[in-house]
Length: 81
Image 1 (cartoon, rainbow, N blue to C red):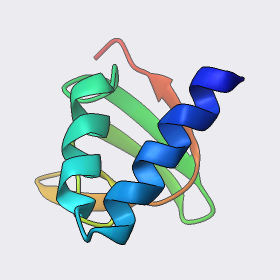
Image 2: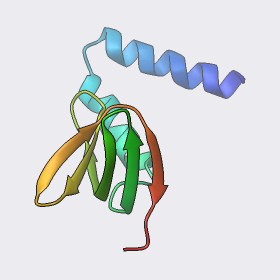
Image 3: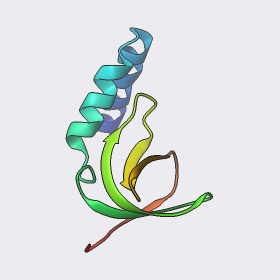
């Protein structure tokens, strides 16, 4: 719990300093999802594609059916194709 709170404090400090890009970069580097084929289930429906990046707002960007789509919240599953 201590390490979680320490990390959370660091994130808040970066936000206070206006360094949102640093947070997104760190999250992207730690993500096991970026570059993987996934299925995202959200209130908007089902998106099957490749996880490309996190955008400036922290949304997951998925390339699907020749276009990029943002997912803000939902369930993700890894896909085999």
